[in-house]
Length: 588
Image 1: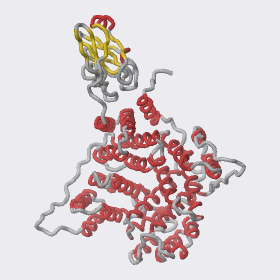
Image 2 (image 1 turned 90 degrees about the vertical axis):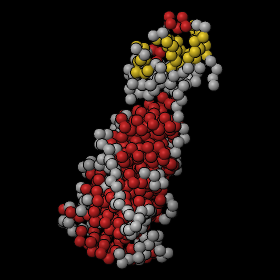
Image 3 (image 1 turned 180 degrees about the vertical axis):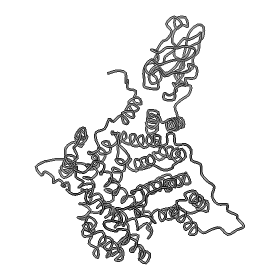
Image 4 (image 1 turned 45 degrees about the horizontal axis):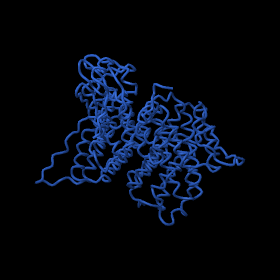
């Protein structure tokens, strides 16, 4: 225990009202109030204003900056947007006042997690930010931090998995590419969006699984999978939930459950303009990160959306002027007869010209595209590789998106890209004929996006006169101005072609996203691009080199098109970081 610190005589403290002494992190305010003496941290836990400049009345200490109120005895705050102020033991002996400069109630990881939960429940950004900063600085596992948001978001949003949980999962995926402040901002942004997405949405209660009598024969997982698909077909999400929970209770593996759920949503084409499959993929990514913890809540949270999800085979654009539904249905009728390869066969690369496949995907002949994809599968091309090529073609649409298009159409090409990415990632976990159908769905969406590349934005060529990559932070300065879409692409090409550090650029690119009041799709774009680029880095083929450049140009142009914003969301996190460092916000 720390040694006692002498303050002054009781009479002197009574006359002066308050004295500040060294101790703790920010000094300790010793206060005489209503014949009692109290010692509190002198820094208001809300935004750091000196509490000795506050006022006390009826046992309540009020900070004069934002009027946060604290119980002098316990330090507890009356205001949920503030935090409790640390208090210190006081002793009065022979008319002399002493304190022990060690807080009665110390900050702990458990308390920080509780405070994060409070911030999520009350939808208070600053409380979330402070908790995230404290947990990251305490070196708590980021998955553990994210799990608090997942647990909250899957239980306290009656309509289930949404953009907030998708953002949180995406930001958890890109943490290895960010510095410490970037990690804080990424987790904070994800958690803030979960809180915002859940605010006022009520609590979601799980149904019971089907009753399982030990004396009777239990249904097989394959039987449950059929029941599940039939329920989704008729939009009966409650029946589907009971079947899903029954499968989990019977010990179905996550892969078996994934196959069952992915089959049901790929029974229909490009559901909810790609969001449905993307949400499913993200939920299974998070389930894997959390090692199946909260699996029931996470996976059942995907079901509410399916009650009214759009099905593209029912839309006019998929039926006219070119009927895309018929050639797809014809192909799918024979897909089950093809031996699906989890990885490319030994000679498949030579039998299938990948450049030709890519060119066909970007063509205006969708029927030939379907035929080529089927032929590639028959020759031993793995669905995983085909999905990767489809994702690359979708990235090309983003990279060549012309700014003369309506601004909202950025989302159109984005939807195709993130759907294709989700298909690619899902197939890497489990390759099934049912999920393979989603490759074709993505290919048709690429076809439908073709007019958004007319005219086509030019892919910039590097300036060979430059001697080095330069400072990647210059990219941030570029995005301080609007309408820098093409300029951003040029800068990136020059930076990387002239020796710029890719790792540092990904970090800067992350900060370019995380400092903005970015909307849902921008988070999707960054994460999908980083993940796809990482996989193309594993090979040195010509198509891989093209893919890496295309993806970087695509994400850079997309971020530039959506910047700058007011940046007030990230400003709150930066305040929390400064407060944790002990900086004084009230001074220049």
